[in-house]
Image (cartoon, rainbow, N blue to C red; front, side):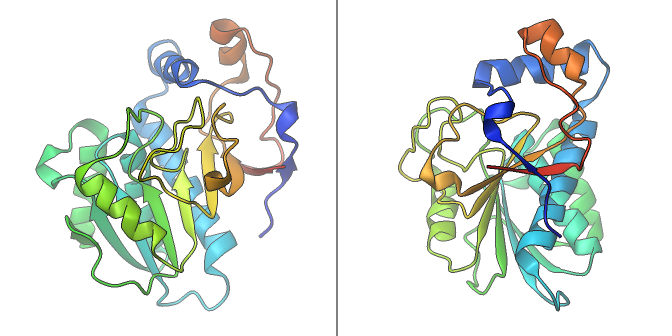
Length: 240
């Protein structure tokens, strides 16, 4: 299914600081909780992977999900759950040990564990994925990835399968477009709410935008930005 298209110059871009304010206002001023935003993000990521990258004859196709312990990883875990319920062979590799997860991401991980989805805390053993989902590090990136996160990024970059990043490719600064070593070389990136200012980088790949239910008036009230009903034609838009 082809996503509706939107010209990038027709929507504002956000810095990391502005996106932090959007998240704060969603929760504190509008009562839209993190779990709701995470569900929207994860569902959109799963839908994009299914519709654009898994093609026909989906039964038995393998999806590898790489997830950190923050909100970005929580969204990727939601995507893993959705894809598993749709009949895909889903494998999840965590950038941190499960007992270090907390809050909503920990809740999402517990659901996945209850479902019996395959989880591991090491580099994926196989390289025969049909698509790789990158939810290792989101806009909260601070410097070059290290440890297991860095190992997962290098593994993803060595795969022949398409890599789809959530919000920003892990290791790419979403505000200033710095690509650290290592950083994901994405086939596509599904960014959330509005485009991030640093996603003008070749490692972003094709750029998509997902609706996480931010009220348009929030942007005007807290950021002084005018944003119309850009998702009226669909929950996922392709930016060109």
